[in-house]
Image (cartoon, rainbow over all chains, first blue to last red; front, side, top):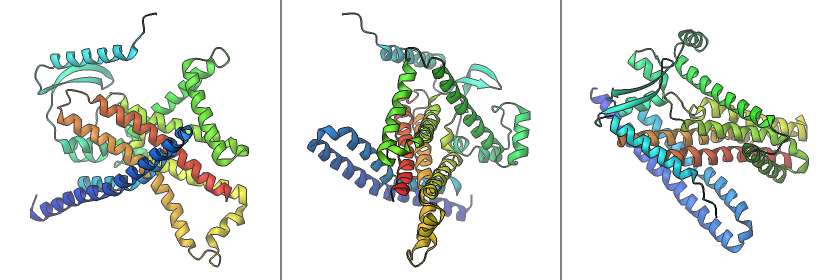
Amino acid sequence: MDLAQGIVKAAALLGAGLCMGMGALGPGVGEGFVAGKACEGIARSPENASLITRTMLVGQAVSESTGIYSLVISLLLIFST
Amino acid sequence: MAKKKRPMLKIFIIFFVVEALLVVLSGNFSKQIQIGFDKGKFVIRNIEYEYNLQDKITEEFQIDEYFRQTGETPEIYGSEKLYEFFKKVFGEKSAIGSFQLLRMLLIVDLLLLFIALSIRKKLFGRPSKPQILFEMIYTSLEQFVSETLGKDKVHYTPYIVTLFIFIWVSNLIGLIPIPGFMEPTRNLNVPLGLGVFVVAIVHITAIKVKGLWGHLKNYINPVKNPLFLLDIVGEMSKVVSISFRLFGNVLGGAIIILVVSSLVNFVVFPIGLSMFFGIFVGTIQAFVFTMLALTYIGVEITE
């Protein structure tokens, strides 16, 4: 591996780490917010708990998708350069 | 009070004894016991292993690339004739990956057929346990469908249930510890195909409900909707978002399991992680996929 390839590999690894770290920020904040709101909703009306839990899981999985995209991109950066 | 049965405790004790036996029999930690199928035979043997984590990950996830780099022909994947056939159909470049993917899809399909036939046999007698489980899945998803689409659109339930059970079994089949087994959803082609079908069914439903012109009006009328190009891009992004979500979750879980098991030298099979990523995430993602498909259909119907 010569110098240019090494620099490219290093930049790709650094970019993968940055991508994963920054991409995990948004889903973390969003999922925590959704879970907190769901707790409030269940505390206010415990008879709707199953509906609220279902909606919460779907919403969390949707808001997680940006994190998943960043995971896919960082895997591409690691394994294809 | 009668003595309470504890099946979970028995299972854990069996796991523990098997793992202790494996650790004792493997001598020192630089060796590994290989259990599984090799060239069609069931083998238990003691092998030295030396591996590179990156090679291992490449072998697991880009199997064509791995065999092209190392230059060896895969022996574990069975018959030569079948492999030649796949080489002829899919080309040299993606023969192995397609072979593995299609084999896993075939296994999943046979499993689903077996489940369906074995439940159907005893349908009219006293309901058995698996029948109760699958009736529960069916009735709960039917309830979701009738809540989302309305009572007169209950005939979408078989499609939704099929989607759910197929993705669920596909995600769970990676738990079986046989070499060469993988989740079919770990390959991007399977979620992409499912996503394309979901969007196609959404548009067919919309055309059925609103008529062909009534549906196309939303997209090709620049006066009423000046941003119609963005809508077309949005339809494309539906496919990408619904399929990459499933694919990324399954692939990420598999990579995390592989990395953690290599940290503990593959001695202790990380059951907890497998349970979390296989059962919990697999079920949640199958559920989310079907829910999103249902929501996409529901948006087109109610408008």
